Length: 456
Image 1 (cartoon, rainbow, N blue to C red):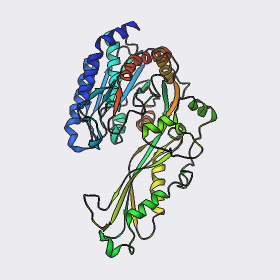
Image 2: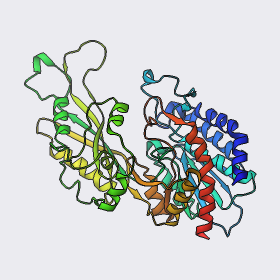
Image 3: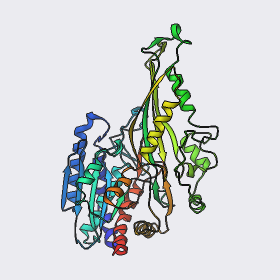
Image 4: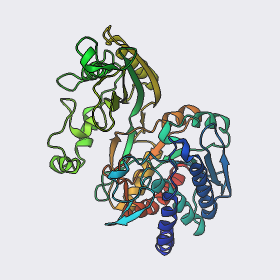
């Protein structure tokens, strides 16, 4: 609609400056020293929702970081779209690899560089500006509600209780999330699913204290060596995961879906150059896109032990540690897979060490049916603003709360992400293209329009 385009064009610089202000707040949920920053960011989100036209905005305290709720109700007979996002961000480490300050946003080559620029401040802020566009032009076609939480990056431990306690307040017809990516502005896509997650930490203990490696080396098992061997045994020569029962519940993607995935443009040489690797690695029998979308994986996210300080210390350590995560696909369940991982690591530990493993957090995988009103509304919105139909793809990441939304609220989720896989999410120099930011604000109102029409 021309009114939307005119309004967005007139206010685009303000939209950007408001986002930059949000990005300057170091809302790192994983670190206790940022507790005040988390509240500051929640209050900033509250203010922006109010300015955008929300009639009701509240900050709800939790056992952890607060949740910001907002709503604009125009007609109880019209559908309700519940927008989810998160204002917390990943820790910025390692700081020395950033080209500019992680919380000092810089615009370079048409991109915003800052922690949270894409994940997820830039993306949820598109929805706030889209609502403002519709409210200020008197064209809002559906009711809108917002949940912007502050604990997504630490597993959303308090969101479940919030959903159960506020179920009536959160009544809606669909969940709309922009915390995913698309292939490119030239080749738009929609994530029809995300993988689940099982995340554990393992501790391997050998001797009851650190030992002199000259006096005891060769006589006592080194926990770091043993842990490395245990981890190495988790994949075979075809990079197939060796844990018994790991694949038992996997629903294999059919030929039709794999054909659809193959339509996505992919340049392997360019892919490797972007990552700075000479060869790719993965499960035999699957393409790169399939390995990161439709197949479960197992990765070591961190490993440490012994002396890692400056200089040398010839020590045989008492303990070694690792953080290990599995990405899950339909029909795998996070709780079951976590138990499987822990029991397997305990079972393969040799008698000269002891193993203790525990869960960090997890979540189940999720799929959006492509024949649903939710997906069709998103697809039509993208087709309207991009001039071409989006390719349905499966995202490799995890958004554990999607399964929670369905189980507690009974709602389907549709993903309408505008980030790119190359946006360095969780890495130094995270970025978000200005073109994608503005395209999201342009596209989102059409989702509301088409969903209201199709839902009736």
